[in-house]
Length: 239
Image (tube, rainbow, N blue to C red; front, side, top):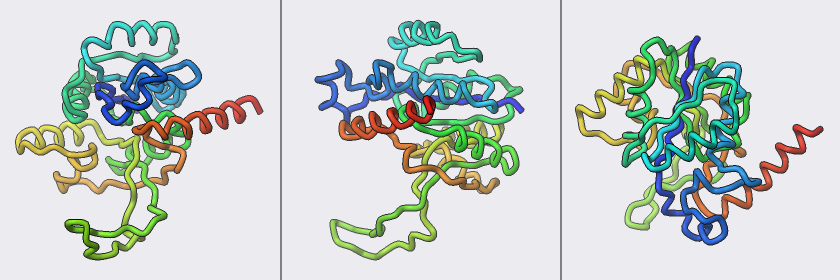
């Protein structure tokens, strides 16, 4: 089974302006955790997985040379390569998908700024997708979820039928290519890859348990939590 992982990392990180003063960048994927860019922490997790064949990073063109230099310094034992991303996440993933070989069985898409995904989650989602064709990580919301309109509550949603979608999201390569082609044909833009596959109505997307630690770093306050999680990971490795 061959598995390619796509990391869309071409975003501009407009919600991280406050953190830019201390790190020199508002690009969340390049902010430093223990002196290492978040993106590299994320790449390390997938390179370490026995199930992953290669990692493909979608980047802004001007970022490719120096990211390739960082990757060379890491000396990864499996292929990690860069491709040109797009103006949106969907365009970036589409570009990376086009650069993946036709012999690839499964494609996993993971947020470049979720560096605390565990090996257990990576394995579980890949194996579930290998059995059923499509799978994502997700967690059940712990807060009560309200439906609103114009700042007025219109109802309370049943949490038993809700999940908060995380990544990785893994699909049979042909299914994901079909979903992107359909979205392009219809002019549809989704918030994640699952939303594109859902529109095909030809595959059931299974959900495996994610984790509260599998956070997406999007705000300055997330960096404090990230520092804590990284310290806990280091303690576990040392112990």
